Length: 628
Image (tube, rainbow, N blue to C red; front, top):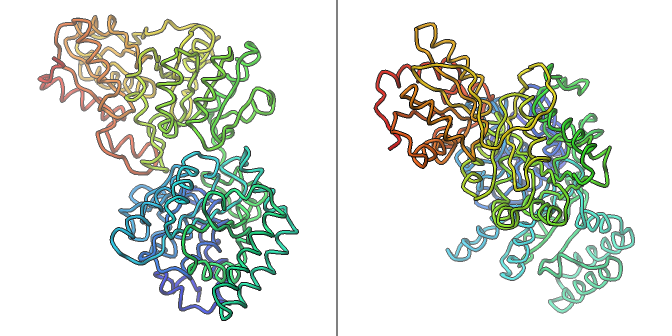
């Protein structure tokens, strides 16, 4: 019988003899690999954290003790051990388990995570709340997947070191975010790990500490001072201890017996404690160990060979990557910036061909945007490629450092719209609403790959201020490639004439709107289809003309309705003094959309061609809502 079959909660785990834990780790890895091969998912990060997760749930008493995960990519074993083993096959599936910790999913998920660098701040909040309530339990933050390249982690460290709360921060150091970690902190952690003299001396210090409890407080203090002194002799700049933490490590993150032992020791140490754990991303599955980047997050794959299922079609990210190379060849001042996502944003080839013009800022979107502003102020043309959901983290920098100064920064916003199985933390459905309100920022979205190329060329060579080009996580339309051309800022395009109603669509919703118009034509409804191209500035003149001609407008967008493109159209018509007409806005409803395939989610919220056609029929039957 498999050991895992008897694990319904961490309490069951605590009943197992210690020598059986390595076998349980193997079973957990087998389940993770099998499930991810069927469903896709964040495989390599979770494989690397199996022993650490087992040790945490062996030593601590969750959910009474709070375990806060950073990013969430490493939490699959946590889900399996906390009563969700029977549902693990539904991971990332429509109606199934989320790929990230979610408070509504389990009491063991004490804090929802999916963006990086949040665990220390959140865990400090739990610790402060515990002390205010006069409670007595442990709080643990598990930081990993490159979260230490994000500034928020250091804000949390700084505050925690000052407050002196009882808090354990564990750094799961696997040298990766999604791509390999970059920057000074990555080099610093490598120096710590590479200090063999200290590592040997530390073992002796730990042995000494273990023998001294009966000798009294002064002897224990002397041993602690000895340990700190040895560290300062062998490792320069003891950063974490200067921040107010007692630092321990680095330790082997795959030595279960050692992890359990050190965690039990650290439970009794008061104040902020930092444990540095070294792990192998993808541990236990050779293909993932050999290529941790590719196996960080992927779709279905053959678990025997490790080969991923290949998509027959290119996507918008591919087209962006190709176009970025073309633009770099034409414009020597053009540079590319990403935030730990060179592969995900399509810039891997740019990095290879133009290494001196490529900058990976780490998991630090706010810094990436401010850095781009500095480059632009000095005469460079930065392409800032960041997923929509992560760009939210840099809103202040977009406003104050880029837009207020009118700097020429081109934001290439990938994953705009519903992204599918990663769910609400990753859907890019708020960027239009937040960005179109900023004076001077142009926001546009292509309906197909040719339009993406046109928009990128226009943004780089024919506009001087901040520009946003947003595009979805989707396959390209497959249209015949055309030569790049310049688009007039704020000018849309009528794709289909009609006199009964006008469908004013943006980006990914243009093609479904065309198909809906064809469906409506079968019942005698003549629907015009207008590709707006721009969410800001909106082509108010052309849309007002359509309003006068048809008397009814339907806006269609793959974005949150509140403050989105449809709202922009209504505002533009009002400002243009157009006569009031009935308007129906179709888009993402004002709620968080959960996970599932992109096709399933679009169907759920009514953004497929048949659903759009049905909404138009119902609208024409009522036509009562006006923008005025």
